[in-house]
Length: 406
Length: 234
Ligand SMILES: [Zn+2]
Image 1 (cartoon, protein in one colour):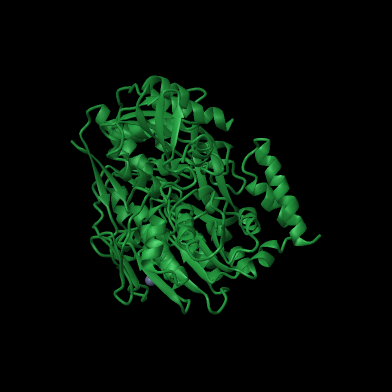
Image 2 (image 1 turned 45 degrees about the vertical axis):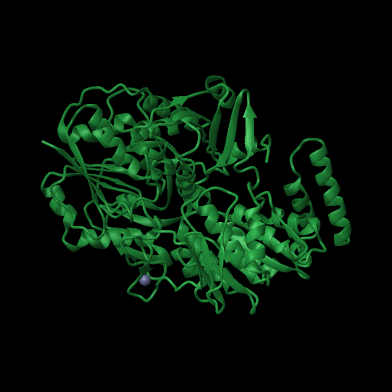
């Protein structure tokens, strides 16, 4: 069958899935396409300029921000819903086969496949940190896969990598064209030993610099984000405004502007486009349950929980935590002990989800008053007509975000 | 007297929420108004040898070797043991107490040789819930619940008492059907991260071995968590 026909049939399948309320159909269309034409991603990507984005945290947001900037100048295709495995990538490419640029979010372990299939012109490596250790394995194993995959990039490709993350640095540093970006993030809980030689890695006191006796060291960044201003290698400057709250969001916005600059989009033009993005895939969206108006937040791993707790510290007094431990959440909840929940002190905390007892035990030891409830509906009955933050792990978030309003 | 808990190299041996065990022990002592302190020992600090209880957590290959090398330098844990200190060691921290353990690239690394056991590289990785029948408990029906994630499997080279018999999970593996180890001063296990959070009985037993009988503590959340995980593992 011709690829065009396959895509047409796949899109029909997706349409049926949506019409009958069986989900967005993204995975379904992607799987269908790859089954009938395993090289579909390769064929569809062949005439496009491709950007591949990966990392533990910030993939989905970064993809949306880069896409916003890119689409000011080019027709583009993207997987905006966080479907970042093989099928999600294939499906994204099929949605707009005539697009000039494809902006693709890719799961950390799918990076080698994505490079082989889509031959990206720009590979964006954000960061690597502990996440779903039962599925993704240890951070260093993933870093190794990246380092090997990088060597299979087309010769003229560039990598945009975070100079502050030892694993992104180590994976990217052998490539001849690396654009180093720094958002000034400090320290790294998984990088106490050198990715190159395994000796204890030296960090300065603030956590802004690292090096090893073997020669491995933090590279000097070409682009630096400092107090909301992005400064480039030729002293070009732009103010970065993020429509999404939080420190990580500003860093993601700045990095997206750097990415767009590689596609000849002016800094002011892309800065304006990224500032307009207010929520991504339901994150920071509103969800009304009973009389309570929840702001929906996703937290997946220690780094993302810390970011969310810091970002929402001045938010509404009422907070509902929903934690599950399914495959996509990671089946092991030990990460709860890598997060200091102290920023929740003084707020009214309700807890539900499949692993509410794990959260309850964690909060008890952390000295945070809380109440375990059956589910979100029970929580809303207790909270009543108020504004509240709802911080959820992956599967709970995706169940709830279907009802959220952007 | 202040009960001193030394948390060894949390930046190296803390991959699986291991500080949860430290925080939980401190919390249980605090609830009973027993004077205590936590000594966080980072790689750049001198390891004290007179603390009451030493905690070693889980870590990746390179971190495990780095921790082992620091401890090997002045036979620190030998001094700890001869001074009467106790050790609770998890996963990578458990492996380094033996004669040898595997590292990346097919290497075998010599351990601290405090326990007659060796760890071998055995695939596939053991990941999932663990359920144990403990050897130490006199309570009928008592069980331990945990989560494991390791590639090495451990074999005793002389007679040793395990922490428990595995009803679910791999534990020490190599078809032994057991997990961990218990000696008068050492408790080791493959149940990582907050194993003591899930098992209040194990947490108190580890404390009582060193400080004598403790008052019972009513903290229903930990019992609920324990019972829930035991039920989910069956
Ligand atoms: Zn090094």
